[in-house]
Amino acid sequence: MTVGGLVVLNDRENILSALREKPLKLREVMKRANVVNEEACQSLLLKMRDEGLVKFDIHKGQWTVK
Image (tube, rainbow, N blue to C red; front, top):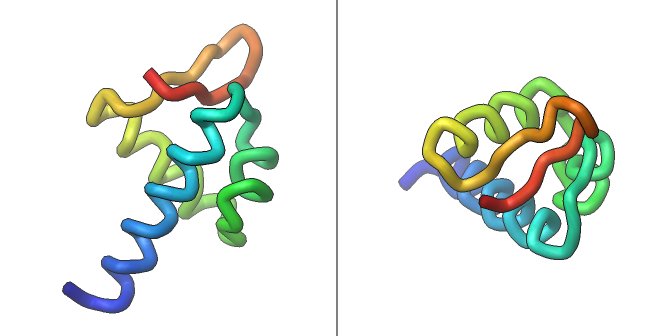
């Protein structure tokens, strides 16, 4: 696996770990999961949503673990 792939796996695990504690907004996810690029974080969250791992509450603007 490439170094970039390892970074994505770490980001995924960090995001899931952060969201297990409580629902978070995008900026809060970035802080807790230590993801510096907002576009990359948003893209990863959307991919994880498509996989059924997380969900987004449009009314509260928060991400949660499914």
